[in-house]
Image (cartoon, rainbow, N blue to C red; front, side, top):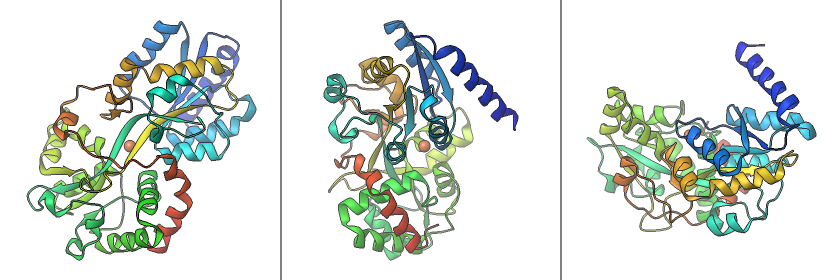
Length: 340
Ligand SMILES: [Fe+2]
């Protein structure tokens, strides 16, 4: 057992023996870890008197862990990213439905699971990045434009097994139909500058380094580079421009960071309270700004220089719950066109 794993195991035991027995606590399993999180959680404890115990780990590891803990899981709430991943947890039967007038009023319907199994709390966009010195933003107005032959050997994008690309394909299947979505994937595959590798940040760095001219990335990876304390990160951002695709049509593909109440939550009432807290004005600001995302509660504004520079944009209004439903078809489609 690695040191990290052992620490994780010990903290889990501590959680099981002490925290579960008390009532005024909430056991949170989260794949988030941002600076603003401390203030976010402190705000909840201040408001409700409920203490938060946190277990932080990678997204897929947390889901696997809740599944293996089964009925004895101390977890009350799972916070993770991407509707496709929330859908996976839902498919495993890990969530229980929540009916809450607060959540239903505050969170737009397209950003939550229709039966209350999970709720989106911040919004991210999957955007097109381009080399400012070699590409004009008008050349890549849509995801569809990446399929044009002019981009042969010029596109960088990560692996298709990544949840962000699976969800993007889920949206394309929904909007274009499977046949057209497959033609798109096949053409983009043929246009790649290199085999898919690395994360979104690596694609942005490859554009800046001249390895490719355009890339697909979630917007906040660009924001992180632009706001980085490291000069070399900011230099990458300066060389890269961002297009919010499909502004003249259906809008940019967006996704959520979200959370749901777990099926075996020992503290269900506290868990629902916590989700309602996350939909509040101040919590929305902390939650979204921690990762340079937008609050899903549309009346809430974050003060963030990079988001402000992006301005407002049109986004695809389909329900993010669709993305998970199309996930098996998306993976098969990517496999058929050999997009690794
Ligand atoms: Fe991410």
